[in-house]
Image (cartoon, rainbow, N blue to C red):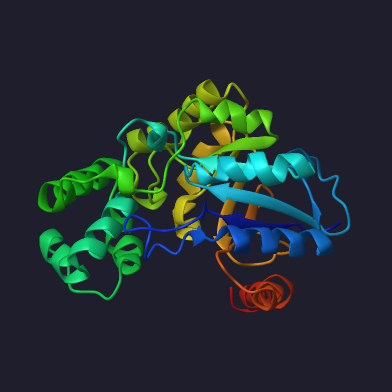
Length: 299
């Protein structure tokens, strides 16, 4: 059976104070170069094909995460005209007017006032980058605690001009994405580390998010992308809740090959930004297989 390759992009465009340091932005030129390189070596497939198992010899699933409006432009200008399917995993809490994610607020504070001031304001040990704060300190917080940190940062470093942030989707944009051949997936309501959710928060962030996305997009949501992509966030409880709430496919990152998967409904992806074609070849054709081989041997 063919083994699926999955790639992930986030924001396509330029990054400012709210995005710098998060490692999520690809230039439009880099994205289109990646797409051309991938199209020459793989066959783009839909989630329908993935779930059915009816795959070509070298299948590739194109995915996006978060709620960036730039992906809608890519769907309009690049993907739909070429008939390329994709899945866009969206946080419905981020399409609300005035919403801001913890990651974006941290990036803004760090880029504007410095990492030292941010760590001091939050009572954290000094670290080198915003990414360290997100994946270490913030991973311990549930939904309510994360929103508390956002409020604390705004109080300390605000007011915040959201017009400087890369544009996010509106609720109405989700229907257009579906009309362009982009399947909507779930990325939790507010982009959280799932390992730290209470039972009530899990219900809201996963099942509640799925219901809200289905209402906004008027389409069925069948898949879940775990924010930050780490297998530690796909706990047994999270996995069970995702299945019971109707998610048929779950996606991590880890940049491993999918000939070795943790469960039949879980797939790995490789996150891409501005890699050269040579780096892309090394990642997808060599390194992800080596990572899976290491995982198979060492566990």
